[in-house]
Length: 452
Image (cartoon, rainbow, N blue to C red; front, side, top):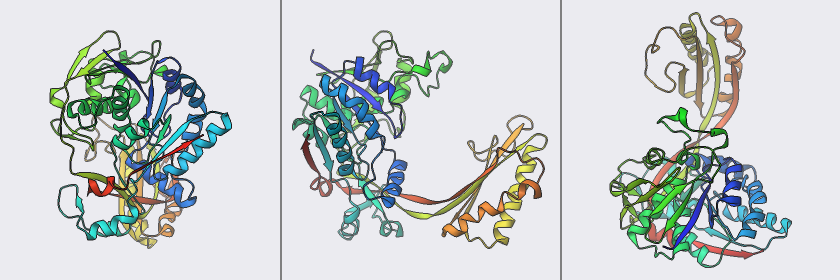
């Protein structure tokens, strides 16, 4: 049966490069896919772009391409990445420079059109924006947006590959779009073949977190996962009928099993019968997972129905400033000391005239993760890390935290340790997610090709 091999090279901005190199060098893959964008990442990239309008993309795309392009061009491996963030043209220019410097001939496709910032007011006036719950979207946040990017699906990436691109750079896509597009292009699928599209998106969903499919972050018998220090990233042999086998490069660490794949399959899933993507709505309850040999799992049976009429848009807006510090207290009485420090902190914020929009206290070792626990789970904790944070309208007010907390080392409860510290004031980004009619977005999506 006809097949194509696809590798997962990156799961987030700053992911390791070595496993991607292993896939390129000995994974026998035809496509390497990179998912670089969490919603938080767009806020980071917006701060970059505010400092320099030529930024706004994930800057590790440059060292990644320097390392991978020579191998991939020689082997005919296509690279697909959403490293373009909120400035895909700038990312493409940076990659083009890498190719020129290396003397490589490549066709670089840039997908644009996901950026809706300049259209939000018009779309809202038309009634084309709705909330994630389906009601009309309103609120002050939309008027303050500094970025607004729609989640695109596989179609423009597929078009770029059809045009002969060796490297495809996009802005905001779904985490799965690169993989679905690679499979559809490599196997000649039509994008409206709903069951194959469902398998293509499930393929992307399993691979997009790289090491989470190969034994990383595994909540099963995690202590038995071998050689995590050399964990391999997943690859998939995808077949014409849409089924695929997930594995990893021979000799790498980690584990591919029905349990590791099943755990990743359920990652970030709300309703498994209605997993929504721009390409297809999937019923995951029909999926079949089968052991296909050592470190191999066969995945089949996903069923799809028509894609939704809207696309999700993620936007960010200035949401004040934060000042924060962490104080570490040790036994004896670590928790009472930390609680007293919180009490003092709140009083000092008021005394200093800091206009706090929000004050947050977290007790690591007590309730920072399992918020709401009133008492330690068993006995007195040996140490407590107290995190105190204030959100303010002004940077000046947030910066005052740096003058409140340090004196508590000698003027507060005893034995604050040297592990304590204060962070400088930083600007916060709020996130606004909403829906837009898909035809209004897709009409503006373009593929721009450059041959180096």
